[in-house]
Length: 182
Ligand SMILES: [Zn+2]
Image 1 (cartoon, rainbow, N blue to C red):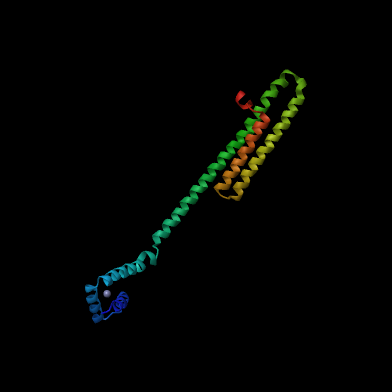
Image 2: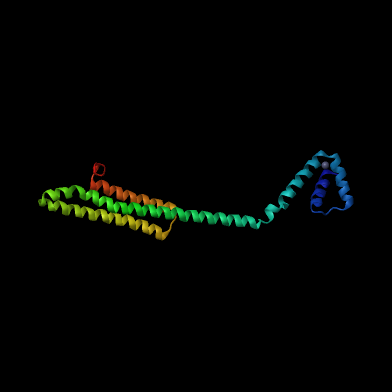
């Protein structure tokens, strides 16, 4: 038997299309030809690879695992989002309470000792109105992020923007150092 004939027989054998006689002829050639034995081994490997069950049908267990993982991920994201909203709410409420107190405490002493400086108090009230407007803006940003639910990344950006606005107002209105002095 020639090597190219043996090669054709090997393919036919993988498809179970060899007669008994052809099969024994092939076996005979393989026994005496190292090159064809190697080819036969490779052909069997390739055949097993394509006929293997993992590629044919994914098990129902795999689908279950994937769905469970997606579910866990969604739950974690919801918890994370909820925690972040809670944190932002606390920051905003604290800002609304603390910043007016800090801004008021200085001039209030002056007003108490000298009623002539009422205009200073008016100025403080105007400034506090500005602070509250900024805080309301920050709250609006957070609320918009929550309503739109654009995901954690966008929510972080909103949170940073809100925090930056609050800090900016603390520096401008209360003045540098006034938070630590009192
Ligand atoms: Zn051969």
